[in-house]
Image (tube, rainbow, N blue to C red):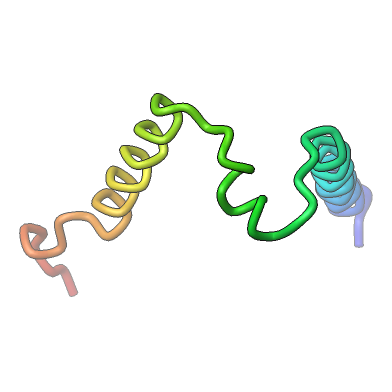
Length: 75
C-alpha cells in the first residue's frame, strides 16, 4: 500500500467514526430509546417533513431504475 491509499482509507475510517459519534450523540439527546420510537421519530414530525419524505421516496423510486422501457438497448 502506498501513502495515498493509506491516507484515503484513514479519511474514510475517520468519516465513519464521526458519523457514528454524531448518531450516538443525537440519539441520546433526542430521547429515542426503542427501535419503534426511532422508526416513527417519536411521533414528533410535522406535516412538511412527512410530505418532503414522501416526495423524496417517490422521486428516488422513479429515478433510480430510470425509464427502462424508453431507453434503447445497446449491446
